[in-house]
Length: 231
Length: 193
Image (cartoon, chains in turn orange, red):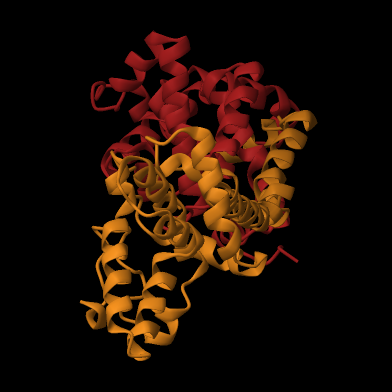
């Protein structure tokens, strides 16, 4: 200590006088603050404990809800939208009639429809055709690279594509000199079915009939890309 | 449980979440720090305020506490800084007095020449209580820096090096302040006796 400087008598006398103590209220306040400083580390709040799991659960619920909502929105045009939308030039009543004629024989079972919906949704959006001729031209067969068995049995989505084509055919029946049989045949079957009939004619050796039918087909579907075996 | 532990070990235990360690530490230092403050500012109300502020600073420094010095040195350094703030706020004259009161500016202080008191005389023992009260008054009348140095030595049991560290001066300045303070108190006691 500071022995060389300190005066023992002064120190002793000072200690005798030094009786002052801090008030008890101060003691309590300081000790309470000290305990409170330590307490929060041990006692976790409700949000601190459950905040993480609740946030994760809320995120999952939100994601699932949005996914279902988007899926429903994608399915709605397939099932609710009028089929005549893709052929705006045609009269509404005639289009509905033609659609009925074209869709009814080729209407897929409900299961197939449901399967077809996602495929339709996956395709990039195509601008609506500006004229009936454009509407007639179908898109390239979506399963062109698949085996012929698949091509012979068109998917439900393809059958639905025939609807605008049938509408266009009916229009042509009014404006162009098509035979009623051809129109009836066109309305009754899809282009794929028609081509399959032509193939069968060829297989049966009926080359003339097959050529005529192919000519009819070309008139009905001038922009349709014919398969290799029928060119 | 905490009796044998050093101040520093208690503070480390408190840092790690042991509230009882702080309580033990507080019990050790509460009276001495309080008296130190009371003698420094001369008012119980101010002493209470400073006392609480200083201990709350200790509490708030819990998480970052490392043993860089003796706990008492650290505690009295906090007290020193808090007192300077107090002087600035309440008594500008005291700050000026503190800043220019290193002892060197009064080398011809007559107290320097006063010898240490002789052996304690039995006849004065009855008067000790009154004498002690007078001593406190003289301590409170010391220049701020000398008073602080004296109280750190008496209440904190700090060595000159520790006083120097707590007050931010070199050892020789601390020694000079303490010497002047003791000599002045000796002179005052001599007058009273």
